[in-house]
Image (cartoon, rainbow, N blue to C red):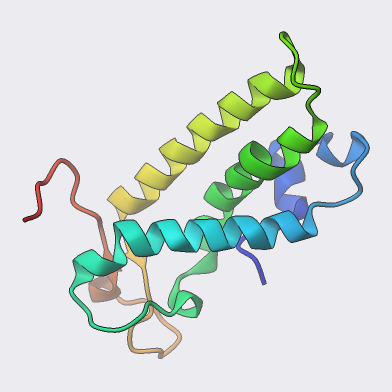
Length: 137
């Protein structure tokens, strides 16, 4: 199951399913794969744990907004635009790309919830923020 679904998109852009495309089911899964890759690249290796990150141990609700913004920016709205100046969807693409970046930074700063021990609960020591403005060597 993806981090987001069409209902989440409608919470953000109520008319998204009234614009000629019935659903964005596949786009949610594709966006989730993109988001997991970004989490792995920006956060997992900094934890210093050997092995691969298990994305099922992430708290999926922590990523719903980011995944929804990513679907809108990268997948849904490009299907709707006609790629000419003053196109509503082109402006929306830029808007949601910016919101995606802001949401991602907010989640990283707040702390990634990762159930490392697999007990079904994320304890305080399993919520790791990504240090901002820090140089790693």
